[in-house]
Amino acid sequence: MKVDLNASLIDSEEAFLSVMDSGFLYGYAIYETFYVLHGKVAFFEEHISRFLQACDFLKINLKEGFSQLLKDRMKRLIHENQFQKGRLRFTFSSGTTLPWTEVVKPTELLSLHPLLNEANQIRLCISKYKKPTKTVLPPFVKYTANYPSVLSFREAKERGYDEALLVNSDEFLSEGSFCNLFFISKEGVLKTPSLDCAILDGVTRKMIIQAAKTLGIQIEEGKYRMDELLDAKFIYISSSTRGLMPAVCLEEKQYDYEEAYIAVETLQKSFLELQETSLTYF
View 1 (cartoon, one colour):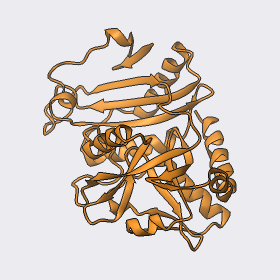
View 2 (spheres, helix red, strand yellow):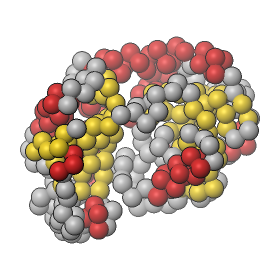
View 3 (cartoon, one colour):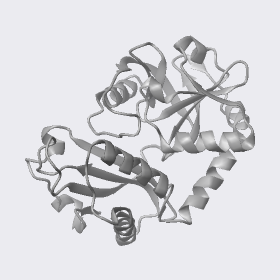
View 4 (cartoon, one colour):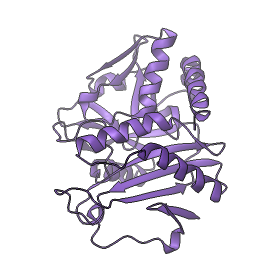
């Protein structure tokens, strides 16, 4: 498998970073994960918009025409590897430049990966770890040094689950290890934690909210306690590579997959149409 390291196609086994790279030394790196389907990238513009926001916040100046150059590199990498479906990750660090100085020669890595899990349902547990409510980073910065996500994911695997849900330090629902959270309340309202709950401003989350509003589905963003989630009719997670996925359990509590799927079938169809349309723009 070839990767793109700083615009050069290299066999993954032969691609190396400097030991002085700030992503390695300081964890000063951001990334985007794209879903590849039919050899094309879904929601490219939405992901890049978020990435550019992050760069602006971190005061990273990119070369002119960066987005188009990156798209061209992605197309070349996908074609070179004859890659049809999976994950494309773009990782960006300030290179050997110290994080508090101007970025001169960043490290840019494009890599292709199989999907971690192609199941159509997920088993969730509640993590002992918490997301810090007060953070210096806004929700549109997707950064690599995300210990709550890594530790809670490992915790879930060790306990026999697929992923873990976390609350924040104020005990409000936050998100999953590597996903956003949705649920249908006992009153029948589709709900998701708001951006001030220490969550990532997920692209898929945003598109699902957009689709729900277009369909006239009642959807609410807010602050919720774990008790409300435990009383919910159904629970779902969302991510770039999994779309909107029903949970079949949260700890010992079981949920009927068919009923959970039917409850959001129209929304799921609308989201998939948006996803399919986005492929035509890549």
